[in-house]
Structure formats: C-alpha cells, structure tokens
Amino acid sequence: MARAKLIAIVNPAARGGSLGERLMAIRQALAGEFASGVYQTRQRGDAQAWARTFRDRAGFLVMGGDGTLHEVLSGMDTATQSLALVPAGTGNSLGRDLGLPDLAAVLDAVAADRTVKVDVIRAVFRDAHGEKRERVVGATLALGYPARVARIAEAWCKGLGPLCYPVASTLAAVATPSFTAMVRHNGARARRRRMTGLLVNNARYAGNFAAFPDASLTDGEFDVMELNAGLVRQVLHNLAVLTRTYWVKPASQGRARRLSIVPSRPMPLMIDGEMYEDVTLLDLAIQPRRLALFVPLGRDLP
Image (tube, rainbow, N blue to C red; front, side):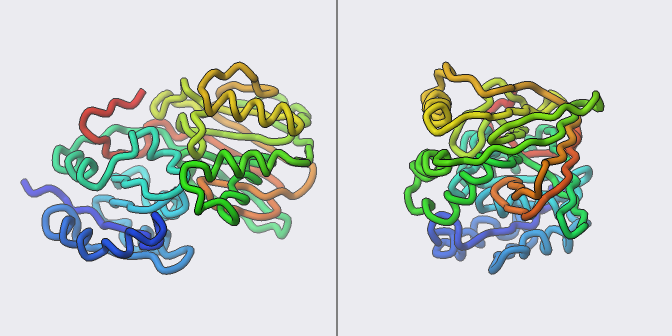
C-alpha cells in the first residue's frame, strides 16, 4: 500500500534566507515519494492559509521556525493529520525536543512511518476589542517577561544566532514591570497573583532555554512557571537555566491540565514566537496525545 504523501510548507526566509536558496534542492528531495506539493510562505499568515486549504490531506512537513509551525498547527486538523518538522528558526522550541533533526533525518522518520502521539494545548483568548481567537500551542505560551524576551529577540537579536535568546533575555530583564492576574488551575478557585511573567510550556525548551527539563510531550499536562523577579534575580535565574544547574528557582512552578488567566490590564500574549496584542482573557486546556508527530529514528520522547 502506497504511503500517503505530505504537503510541504517551507519558509524561505528561515535560517537567514538559506532555505530560499536551497528551495530547488528541497523540492527535488521531496518530489514524488514524500510530498504531493511544496508551498513557500511569502508573508505572515500564508502557512496557516495553506494548512487550512489542505485539511483533507494526510498531513504536513514544515520547514521553518516556531512562527511557521504555529501557523500550521492553528490551521491543520491536529486530530486527523500528522506533522513532520524540520526546525529552521531561531528558537525551535519543539524542534529541540526532537533533537533538531535535519531534512534527511525527518524523511527517514516519514519513510519508516515512525510517529508518536503528542499533547498540544488549546488556547482560547479574547482581546480588549472583544475579538475571540482560538490557537494551538505546540511548545510555549507566555505573558509578561518571557513575551518581552520573544519580542526583543525578533526585533533586535536574530542575527546573533545561538546568543539571540540569552542576549534578549538579559535586555528584557531591565525594568520589567510586574502585573497582577486572576489565575485558576484545573478549575479550582481563582487566586490573585502578582508576577513579572508567566510561562506555560508543553515541551522542555522555551527557545534555547531548557526551562522544563522534566517536561513531557505525552504526559497529559503542561508546565506552568510564574516569575516575580527584578533584574539581578532574573538574570541569575536565566544563567541557572542556561547552565542547567537550576539553583535559582522561579516564584512558582507546577503542572496543570487547565489554566485560566485574567490579567489586570490588557497584555501582549506570545504563542510559539507569535505575538497577539491587548489580551484580556486566556483559557488553556491540554489535548492529550492529540497530534501524530514524526519522530526521527534514535530519538525517544519522554
């Protein structure tokens, strides 16, 4: 029986434009056996539009960064379609859990039909204008300080390569304002919390920070970290995570299946590298083993 072919979505601007330079070679590698079509993004929103267009196909092969992946996840049918990921961005949060595989390793996984059912997070949020959106979170969602890190990294630090997020995290720690929010875990009574940042993760990595070393893509929960630190303590916490010593702890850390956040003021929300402005309400729910993800040979997910 012939294997169902994937739809390939490529961001030619990824890796400083090198994917665009290799587009012909990528098409040749995928032609016939692996992909029934190769579609390149030209602007924000293209990947989501392609994913919505091909919701009747077997799945997608995504070559790009966290933002491209975010669009595809939010456009595809995660319950019935499969996903192959070739991480080619700056953060590559989910890709790092896969060992940052290259195209050859991913195609080997596709050829072997080696998939693992992984969790995703369903995020429903509303902004100050009353607009309601629903998105799928593959790896990371954040308010406050971590969202500010992502914004600075995208605007000023992408050319720094592996140093992008360490530098952005230090710049973002300068004069980070605190905020209050009503936070409800697993349907329990809401509590008022003061913090400088909230980080929710499905994977072990947030950018190139192994922020949640014990996280699992298959345990039916997501990790929640509350931060409440000034410049010195936040920088020390960042160094502790980068060196994987974890000797400086966040204000609070735990796991949840559901989470509701109502910030005291409209705030930017970051989902897998993409920013959404003036968010006033956020509801999260884990969707256990929702997505069939191709996993490279020799890589076992926790």
